[in-house]
Image 1 (cartoon, rainbow, N blue to C red):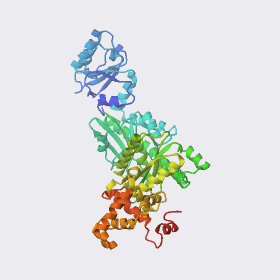
Image 2 (tube, one colour):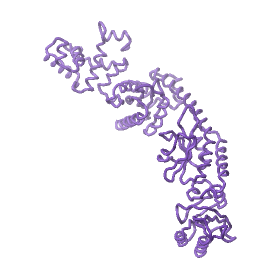
Image 3 (cartoon, rainbow, N blue to C red):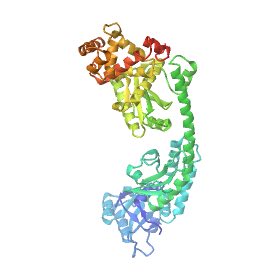
Image 4 (cartoon, rainbow, N blue to C red):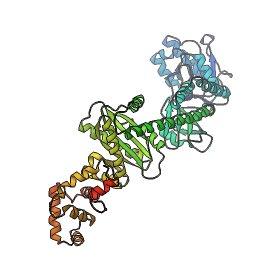
Length: 529
C-alpha cells in the first residue's frame, strides 16, 4: 500500500459515490480496502482477519444493506470479527438506530454510499494509483478549457467546477479571486510564496499551490484547497494546478489589456463630458448611455488624487472593489493622476441619506488609503448633466485641498467646508472665485479700509499689535475694525477654519498687482471673464 485512506480524504474527493457517514468515528482512516458483493458473503482480508492491519480496513459492499435490525447487527459483528473498521454500502442510512449505536460501540465507521463502484474507484486511486488520480485531474482541467471564458473569474469558475475542488488566485496579502469556496485566512497565511509548488496546512485545511508565471502581476499563486485532503490528493492537485496555471496567466494578460483599453475609453469620455460643462452633445450623450452613465437624476461626485507618485490603474481596481459596499449606483474611472467618480440617483436622496453616503465615501477613503497614499474630495449633491459636471469640479477642487491638509485625514467634503469653500479660489477656479468676492463685498463700501485691515490682520496671524504696526494704526483702532468685519460678514475669526478661508478669500480678491486687483487678475486669466 502506498498511502492510507482517510474518511476526510474520501469526503474531499469530488467523485466519492455520494458518500455519507452514518455512525462511527469522524476521523476514521484505513490501511486497506476490500470490495465485494454482499451476496458472496462478507469480504475477508488476505490473512482471514487473523493479522489485520493496525487500523483495520474498509469494506465496500456493492449490494444494498440488510433490512431487519437483527441482520444489520449480525453484519456489523461479522465486519468487526474479520478485521474491518469501516463498511460502506447502499442503504446504510436506513440502519436501525440500535444498529447505529452498535457500530459506534464496535468502533466501526458506517458509511452510506449511493454508487459503491464509484467509491471503490476513488479508493483505488487514493490508495494505490496516484498516477491515475493525477491523470484524472489533468483531464478535468483540460476539459475546462473546451469552453471560452468571459474573464479570469469565469475561467476559475470553470476549472473549479470541472475539477471538483475550490480554487483561489492570491498574492501575499489578499485573495484576488476565488471560486468554489472561501480560502481560510490561516491557510492563506501558511502558504509559502517562494517555491514553485507549495503544500500548506492549517488545522484540517490543506492547499496545493503553484506560482503564477505572469510578468505583469508578480507574486501571484494559484491555489487548490479543501479539508482533509490526503498527501496523494495534494500531490495530484499540485500537478493539476501546474497544468491550469499557464491558462490563468494568459487570461490575466488578456483581461489587463482589455481593462486598459476600457479605462482609456472611459477616461476620455469623462474628460469630454467635463470639458463640455454638461452642455447638450448628442455624441457624448450616446457614448455615456452605451457605458451606462446616465446624466439624468442626481449625482454626488468624488475625486481621488495621489499625494505623490501613483499608478491610477491599481487604485481603480481597489476602489471599484470597495465601492460595492456603498448602497448606490456608482461609476469611477481614471482621470489624470487620479480617479474621478460619482454616485447616481434617480430621485433626490434625503439629507440623512446623503450624510450616510458621504460617510461611506470617507470609509472607502480610509480603506483604500491603507495601500495608497491618496487624498479624496467629495462634491455636493447636484442635479442633471450640468450638475454632474459641477459636482465633479467641486470634488476635484476639494481633493486638491485635501492633498495639502493632513489635519483633515486627507479627506475634504465641499458641503462640510462652509466658508472654507473659498480655499478653492486660491486654485484660480472661476467656479468659486465669485463666492470670495460676494462674501467680502460688505467690506468694500465700509469706511476704514476694512478689507485691507482684515487681510493684514490675517497675514499677521491674527495679532492686533503686529497688524497695528504694519498699518501704522493704534491697536484699539485695529480691534474696532476687526469687530466691525465680523459683524458685517457674520463670521467668527476665532475659528481656525474660518480664518483660513477668509485669509485665502482676501488673497483672491486683493491680488499683488497694480491698480484694480480683481480687474488685473481677470486680465491675466486668474478669475476668468
